[in-house]
Image 1 (tube, one colour):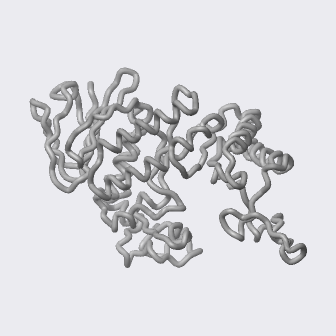
Image 2 (cartoon, helix red, strand yellow):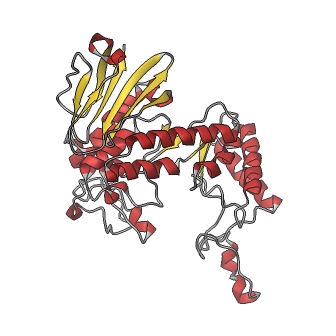
Image 3 (cartoon, one colour):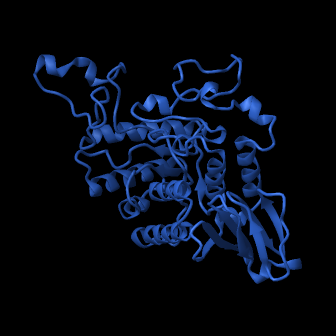
Length: 365
């Protein structure tokens, strides 16, 4: 994770320690916080130093970087200047490692994110993350979510002049309210969010603690970044830098050691989905084909990769729904490779009863 647009006033090399306001009555520019003075990227020496730091890490064996706040390197944000800087950074890093992987964080709509793909490999899909969370909260709009994702991917390709894009998909990050707090501690909805994330094409990122249902809300960022809850006791390795306000056993949070023992826990749900995804190139690289339905709580789609197909169905609502499995997945033509429910009988006519907050993945033979 490279945070290179700003420094800290507590850092030895920070000009903030000179306290210019006391000497010259001038102040440094700090977009995010008075304690984080911004670097001047109009200065070639600053750019060269940041490239030097990047090269050093690559020489040590790092494969790539998450580039924090990638649109805030010039103030006010100047798109052309930002793009030019990242093109320079890309060229310099490629000299050390031609396969270096650069992921940009630009918290914006897809049309404003797309230009950065001229220089960077991937961008965090904030727009999709918001849509996924919204669909789960309202228990609907599954088809709309798929249409939106297709629109976003098409925007990326059109505006970046690339044939394909590795999209970075996620649910939340360190600057946002934790999803379990958004879902009011609803385990079923947290599991559904994980199922949606890990069955869509792209490169999924999981914010630490999401897999055990950690809590965290505004107004303070530090309480959305509380220590990971490893154990119900003070086990070795438990971080104590901050007294948790939200992620506590008294608030219903279940530590990892307890979830490991429960096959139905959120952690094991993530683990099963990740295992299935790692075994399936279709889930990782497949071409998304939405199946539009009028039933708001359903999210149905296919994925295709190298002439292989899978069908995925999610029921975002609490009530059981009867769905129709496409013909090429019925009877002996397909097999269920993942399901969150015990009853998994596909009828001869393709009908299937999908329980509330449930998911199924069917692979075509």
